[in-house]
Amino acid sequence: MRCRVCFVAVKLTSIVLGRKASE
Image (cartoon, rainbow, N blue to C red; front, side, top):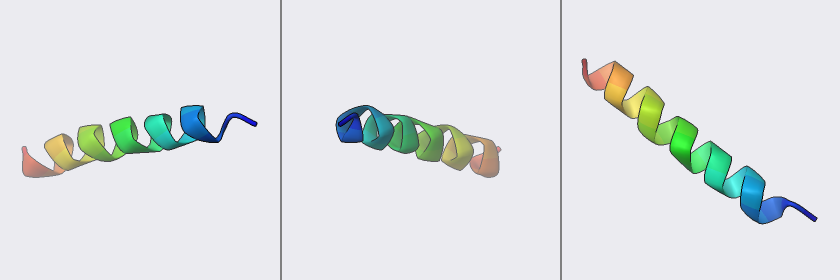
């Protein structure tokens, strides 16, 4: 299972979206 990979991907995406939203 690649749950860890998916979790990391989601986390990174959230950070990126959060930064874009901040800008």
